[in-house]
Length: 113
Image (cartoon, rainbow, N blue to C red; front, side):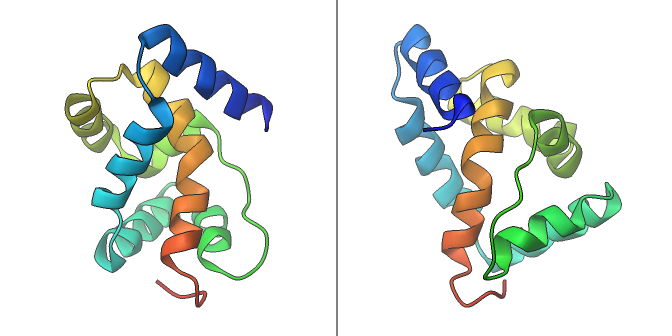
C-alpha cells in the first residue's frame, strides 16, 4: 500500500471509523457519467484535465494531491462532502486523492465517461 494509503488508514483509525468504507460509499453516490464530466470540466478549468483524463483512459492513473483535489472539486463541493461524511477536510482531501482516481477509473472501464 502507498504511503498515502497508510496515512488514510491511520486517519480512519484515529477517528474511530472505517475510512475506506465511508469513502467508497460517498464516491459511489458521487460518480455517474454527468458527475465525471463535471469533474473533467472543473479539472480543465484548474489546469488539471490531463490528470483526470488519465483516470478515464485505459492507461495508468496519474496521481493527484489533496490540494489538486480541492482545486478540481471546488470549496462548495468539498464542504458538501465534509457535511455528508462528517470528516474534516484535512482528512477528506487526502482520502479523495487516494481513492478518486481509482473510483473514476472503475466507473469508466471502456475509457470514456
